[in-house]
Image (cartoon, rainbow, N blue to C red; front, side):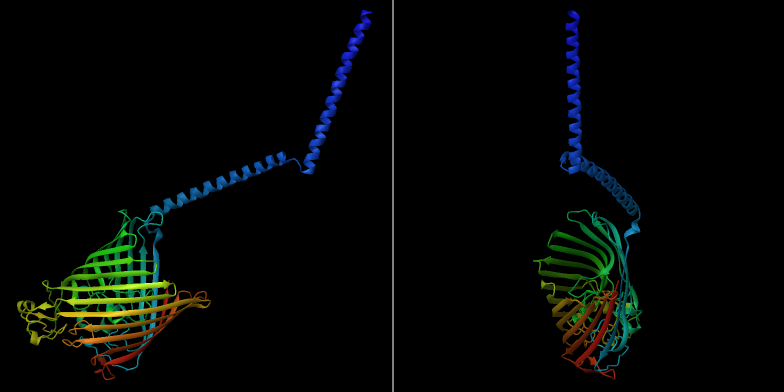
Length: 490
């Protein structure tokens, strides 16, 4: 009986175990089938997320590696550039040629008292024919970079051609004043200065060396200038200064430049003596800018090449008198296509004291030199006053074939004692007018984008006969010229 009961218990245990194993096997099979079904049907979002995240992480690892390599290359490049001062040097250039035709067909007179054939032209003085006006080669290095603007740079501009014969420096050679333009060497170093930018306030910019003066609206920059020729006012301005120049923005809209320098190739009466230059530029609005400034300094020179005790080529300084040249202008640009300019300029010459003549044994009545001596007071020679006004209307527009521009310039100038302008008669007050109409075209075609063509029609007039005729005599009070110019910049 006991054995039979024990057998029933063992049979029940085996039956329960077998039933449990059977249920486990069935459940496992159903789970596997369901998993396979889900993968095949794409309904298992959890599984897909796991796969996508893995791919994203793999891509992120690759991007992180690439970024690290880029940063490494940048650091290496920066280190190389910082170690090489000459790594960011720029080479720039301008080539200009023109053909000028004077309808009066004047004959150039090559004497110190004559201003060649085209009267008040300081640049295109050749009355008829082709000329290489300017070949400018500039090498420069900015003080710093866009990310770090502070440092030390430099600027050197070498100029060749007919135009530079008017603007060039005489470097102590007084034959500069007695040699006609065409007899002067056609080359000069127009700019040569060290550029230092210091982290003072908003940034203090310092130039040490030789550079263009900043007076007046027109500057010796043919690419930016709207005209072929320069106005009468530009002919009376000092040309270059050598010294120290400080530029600073006291407020964002106001740029101030102060220079303490010597002039080197200036119009009468300011010469190679210490001067102070101040220029201000104020952007009143996005459309309107005002500019103004002056040069004030010692006066002047007296070159003797004749009788009366003067020495040929001798330069006499008169430190007792001072000269002043100043200007103010306004530039209105309502949109990129239109610009309007009004410019006023004034020059005051202190003159030469008669003590300079007496101390050096010079007799004014017998003096045959440059400038011609004109007694303007009981004890002063060559005291002068020059002033003028100029207006510009400029229009430009970009078309599919390039940019077309037109410029109208009107200038009136008054030389009180006939001492500033080259065509003046010494001691005689002269009034000059200058009207120009210039058409310009800059192609948009490949390989011609840096070329500009200009055609300028110019009319000059005076209240006296100061312009030359075909015999070289001053018999005209008016003259008309045509100038065709081609410019190339790189």
